[in-house]
Image: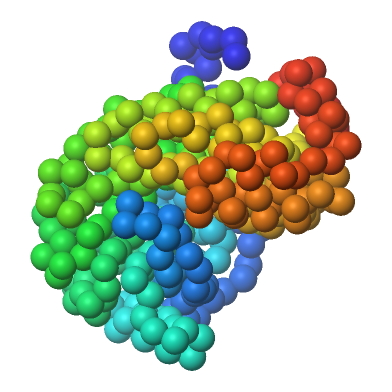
Length: 359
């Protein structure tokens, strides 16, 4: 990518321009949500430093990410599902937690070893989740083995993490880093912090006995070609797992969410979600890293999600899921399709000034 002059970051340009566009896109949303109901809850499995474990995943409905309220990330539509008004009361948040526990009791034979809590923003931001609620949640899940909470690096504080570890919970802070490349994070994703902030957050979390971090990376943000996105993910995974305290990279292939800049680009023919072959390529290439690299392509096989030709999507998705559990790159030798040649041509020939080369 070419290097911009400093002038593009003047007032009204660069990040300011991105935020202006994102605020306009988000203003089209007029949906409302019940503050007593969680956004989503589901049961799944995850690869952790302790092995493959059952997980209860909770997305609490809060007032939404404060950065998204300013404009926010080009691909993120989660704030469109948040409660209007900017805050949710402690009692309502705990009602949501109770609903998630009821879902688990109805659908699982036993409590999950790991609980993952998201807010479509930062769980550790007290504007979204009050300290009272955070402490109550720590106590509620104190009988589990591991807790994962998502946060921007700004809010990662060792004293806050101790609220969970003192309950006997190994606690991972999942940080939406998106990429280890500062310019891609700023210009393509529209996130304001730098890789050094991620490193500081890792140091803060790992200073607590039982505390650590996971890096969430974004596969193919807008304005990158397929080949650029693949190489950025390979570099980013290696760089993240070289940081002390970071034990896992979760690579999230971009999907087209409502009320986002990515959705506008998609409808105008300027964005295609990543190929599943690209996801497999990154996982295979980074399998030798000392750490865990996983991916769970949301919406795989759909036009708005990561996909190949349509015929092989489910087979490649199953191979990715198998890799997540076993961390064995040989699983990708078991899948093939003629469209892999098209993907190779796209990676080799597509350029960011004329993408997408193929839909």
